[in-house]
Length: 378
Image (cartoon, rainbow, N blue to C red; front, top):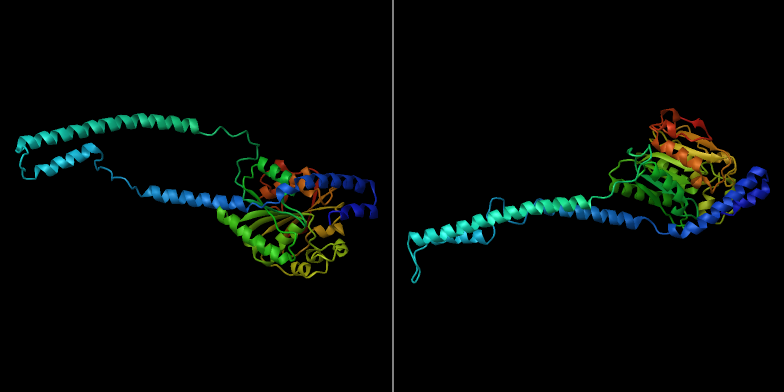
């Protein structure tokens, strides 16, 4: 499947297509080197985060109910001596033991003196311990964080990244770095198996992962970025499985929203068949979707070799709030690693209304070289 863009270069030869193909080969070579590091999923980190939260909750509950002596209750050997003296004062004298008020007063005064001495020593030790603890806390404070970019410090929803066909989360290495440097702190990527045979099943898996992210982060809605087939899976989840309640903004990169004719060249794989223009999944996505709450931002390129025709990467749906962004001279594999596209993604995710760039919260972060067209803004 990844070799198809280079075969298309022979079908549509041009200087621009040759340049894009060379760049795609370089991207592919780099991605093959990074592919092994993206095989493992992030479920282990998520499980560790949940375990840590549970442990903190348990420690907090234990700390709220003290197990030691109650406040105001004497403790230590001096307190025990005072209690013995009180008990002895009310006992009758036994044989061989000095009796009388004088002996009782002597024992009580000795116990009281011991109590006072212990209290004074405890206070002195507590003062020194307080100074020691304060010094330890001061020296244990973390080093100051590195200088942040101007856009950092804002509150951004979590971002979930979804890769394309026969790929994994390593394709988003540069995009994750770009988002993190500009203030996005919670970034995750979901791997789905290349043996997945149905976009609907993959959308259900995505839905479970989205719920897990919302539960762990405390956010009611998150943002989603999908490359190629990942964008189609994400759209199916949003539009057909009620995911618009959880997804605030969905950004797609080179996604065959209308199906691609190139899928007819590889009809053996069920997922590829579902990317045909006449597939049942594409027909389902064309159905009415009233009151959909998710905003869509679709990046498409005139040199995307996998999209036939290239305009199929746009969303043209009367019920969806969508902004289609044309990027010139970018191949299919280069979408996640292109700096201009990364700037456009940051602009879309930071905007109060991604379908209307005039309302962007970061107007100075607009991407150069992007052309947008409001294909279907409700």
